[in-house]
Image: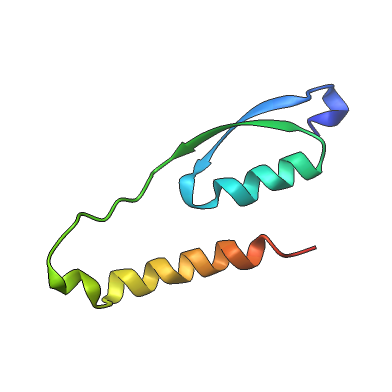
Length: 74
């Protein structure tokens, strides 16, 4: 739709987690992307307990795997 309207560059505002995959899709369609990632996730440094998985870590792993698999779809 952007190319049809003569738009060759756009600002892509999306989750930092899937910015790379989303930007790749725009570039593949021929639209240059200026990245504007939001909602960065930061895990505070902690003690030894941070070395063991918890429910939040497993949930995050699911999101990361989703993004990695999405980068390899044709």
